[in-house]
Length: 236
Image 1 (cartoon, rainbow, N blue to C red):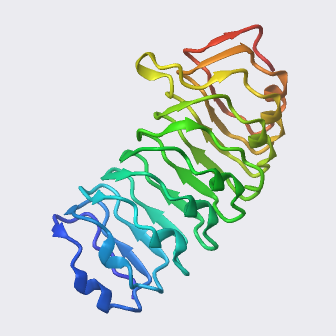
Image 2 (spheres, rainbow, N blue to C red):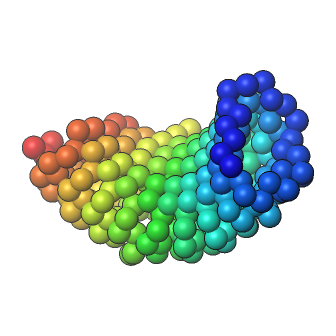
């Protein structure tokens, strides 16, 4: 069962009776005016994809999302979800894509995210997240990491350089509105990300020079480092 109800004028909340559709695999409600929480999806054990982007949904992120036996992709962008992110996000055995850009999530990024062998694309841009970027010690399959426009601090972990499949790294804008943001130097280990195409580090308080190793990334096409405190020469 694959219903798509995207781009209509649907209002109200997701009815609890949706739980009767136990064979539901895909639920697409994007670009409507749906409100309320996602609690009514708890019994849909065959669900693989949830897309509720561009609505007015609220509430905290349900724990069952990250312990679900079948969910591989969750898209919650542009809603009003709040609260913290469960450490179970990094422990899911199925979840490949988790997008929650432009909500009101708070707290820190769970350390388990950096230890996931499954998670491939993580978008948490434009929330209110604080704390440090976790170490990425086992995320060998990740291709997109979007953590920009938050309130993150600390340094860029050198362990991100171990993610050989990474194509996009967005840490921009954590220093907006006079905040310190991400500081320290750009780790030379990022030069090991030979598939990196987009690198957004602008609007932080990064210092020292741009490591020459970035100039040897064959795939790199977009490098944004504006509004930092960088010195030295441009690597080529």
